[in-house]
Figure 1: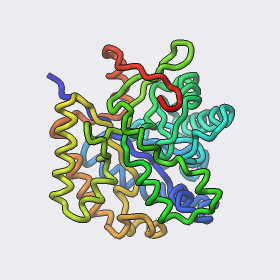
Figure 2: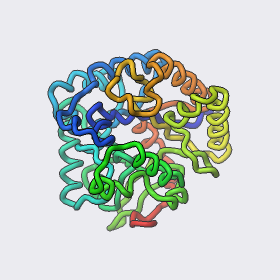
Figure 3: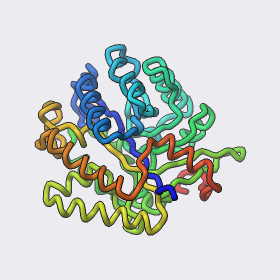
Figure 4: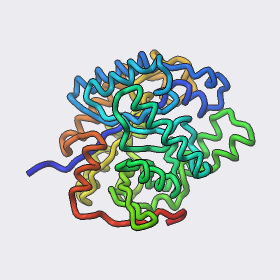
Amino acid sequence: MSRPLASLSLDLDNLWSYLKIHGDPGWQARPSYLDAVVPYVLEVLERERLRITFFVVGADAAEPRNHAALRALVTAGHEVGNHSFEHEPWLHLYSRAQLEREVEATDDAIEAATGVRPTGFRGPGFSWCPELLEVLQERGHLYDASTLPTWLGPIARTYYFWTAKLSAEERERRKGLFGAFADGLRPNAPYRWGLRGGRELLEIPVTTIPGLRTPFHFSYLAFLARFSEPLMIAYLRTALTACRLTGTEPSFLLHPLDVVGGDQAPELGFFPGMDISSAEKTRLLRRVLHELARHFELVPMGVHAQRVRERPAPRLVPAVAGA
C-alpha cells in the first residue's frame, strides 16, 4: 500500500524582494543572490534525493543574469511555479487587467528562462482574490497554493509592521498582509474552488496543524529550535500525527532563508534567525525532512495536484470574498 503524500515547495524570494518587504530602498537595484543560493539549496536537496517545487518571481526570470541558476532547477528535476512578477503581497488590490499582466508576464519569463511553462501559482504573502483564481484557470494553471488556513495572520502582520521600515502609505497598502483571523476557518486539505460558469481550480493550502490551525512550515520550526530543538521536534511530530489522524496530506513550505544564514546573505541580518549559520539551518532542515519522510512520500506540488485530481472530487468552495 502506498504511503500518503506530502508536497514540498520553496518560494524562491530573492535578495531584492526581502529588502522590498522590509522597506529598504536598495531593493530597486534588484540585487540578487540566486547564483549562490540556488546551487546551495540544490545540493541539500540532492543529498536528500528530493524533488520539490520552486515558486519563481517573474522579475527574476526576466533577468538574463539569473537564467543559469533557474535552468539548473529544471535540469535537476524540480518543478517551477509562478510566484507573481513583482512579488507584491497585495494582489487582492490589483485590477483584473493588472492580475492578467502579472500572471502572463511571469509565465512567459519563466518559460523563456527554463523552457518550462508553470502550471502552479502561489501569491506572495499568501495574497489572493477571486479574480486571480479566474485568471489562473483561464491561463491553464492546474492549481493555486496561496492560502494559509490559520488564525495567526494578524499577529504575524503586527510583528511585521513593528520591524519593517514602512511609510504610512505602505502600511495602508499592506494592511491585509497574512490574512485575517477568519482564515483559520478555511479548508486545510486540497479542495477545488468553484468559479463562474461551473469551472474549477484546485487549491492546495499551505498546511497548518489540523484542529489547532497553527503553522508548522519550516520558518516556524526554526524559530522554535532557537529555544529548544526537542521542542521543535515535538511540535512537528504533533503536527504530523494530527495530519495522519485526519487524513490530511500536508503541503510543506520552505523559503531561502530557511536554508541560508547570515554567512551567505549578510544584507538580510535584520530578518529573524539570520544569526544562525547556513550549516546549522541545513542540519535542522535535514532533520525535519527526515521526520516528514518517515510518514509521507515527499513529492513536488505538481505531483500532489495530479494525484488529487485523479481522486473523487474534494469539497467545492465558492471563490468569493469572505467565503
